[in-house]
Image (cartoon, rainbow, N blue to C red):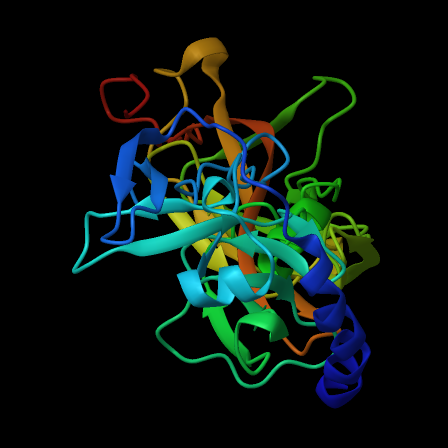
Length: 343
């Protein structure tokens, strides 16, 4: 795929020869420099550079307002450029000449820093080096033929180079995942809501059962979507790996599966997969209820056509109320000789 992409760009590289334009006075012009032959050139106050990465709301950084290609005075003369068409930068070792060049072409967007047209590579990418983030991009750097051998090189970057309106695979994956309408589980709990009371009620020391009721793709997974965003085709799949049950009394329980739904046949016994016993009543809580919170831990895996892949961790939650009382015991004594009931 890379060979086909490169072959398709050979013609584009050849066309770059026509993208040079006559220099126009710019705010960066810093003065005048003349050589020993009396040829004078307007100067640049600084070496041309790219804007610092500062993505806008679309995740993109605008390119440089003026694009400059480094050129020798002899080559410029052979190409028919007059001294007024060039700019000289005298801040380095000697003098460096620049001519303006079209900022965009079929080969990409011009980078003043790299002195080439930059283009995100199509097709399958090589293995990402471990020093780069999972959302890094892989780019092609195309130098104009007229200024050398038309060298093509490749590089990784954690940020999108200025001027390119593309997403890295990781950026596209996040944009896709942001559209997922994942939600908390439907809480299954024993005791269930008593229709006569309108709420759940349990007692200190009595087993409480937790489970995932009626699991759905958006509450449990797997949930998968594929989309093309910013030039990247991404498939992302989300699924729950565990649920943390916060019981409202400071306790918690992490359960890795759906849990076990309670039926009357189990009797008064602990859940074999996910349960809890309260040690204090809910009387001190607002409304005399503990708030039970089920927090789902989602893992979203994504892959791109380029071969890039990664994971994103998300959470969703849901709540239910539970009243916890104390069991009241009554002791019945026998009549004593004094005729009173024992306590």
